[in-house]
Amino acid sequence: MNYGEMAVLVTGANRGLGAAFVSALIDLGARKIYAAARNPGSSQIPRVTPVPLDVTDHDQITALAERLPDVTMVINNAGIHRRASLFDHDVVDVVDTVTRTNLLGTLAVCAAFAPVIIANGGGVIVNVLSAGSWLAGPGNLAYATSKAAALSLTNNMRTELNPRGVQVAAIHAGFIDTDMMAAFPGPKLSPRAVADAALAEIGQGAQEVLIDDMSQKAKNASALPVAPLVK
Image (cartoon, rainbow, N blue to C red; front, top):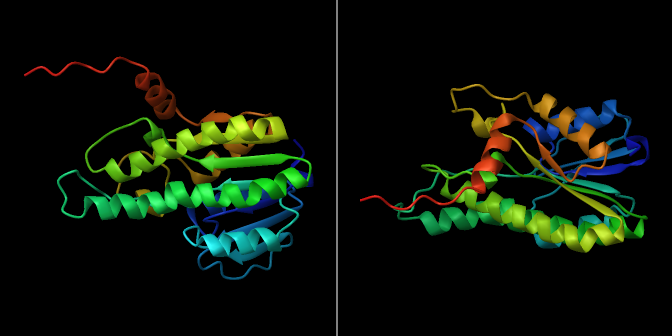
């Protein structure tokens, strides 16, 4: 892939991993970069155009797809994390909120921009997922559920879009040093290192990128038998 020929939309582009993708794409010489966020601010960087986008607003997404007919690559990075337990009184509301961004927001952007990419002769859709697509843990019910569903979405999209010339890539990583993981005290990945590694593999045609050992181990563990309950 020649990134110099790509017009790229990055969601959640104003900070963290999204901002790292924008920076990496600049260095790769992307022809045009649309940096989308709820509050995108302004940019004096050539080839970077800030655009307002709330991925839970389907009308706004549809309108944006009409405004950006040259897009050939989408990086669905926008996402949120909320702690949730089955025993929380508001667990359904929390899961609903997280799912509307992490799953339905991704779906809405893909549904709006896939026809644009196809009309431009094909291209790439990248969904930023997580090692959490396969992991379960205390407080992780909402986030893990949304990312597992987004993984299934990505796999199903691939069956429809690959024959139409669209590469559909899933990125999985463990803990990344972003605002979302600010409270996590352990080692974290550099957002720019994640963006660089992901774009390098995607540029070679990869449709699944396992950034770190945590992601690889999580995927491997998902194929193991479920242990029986020992009372």
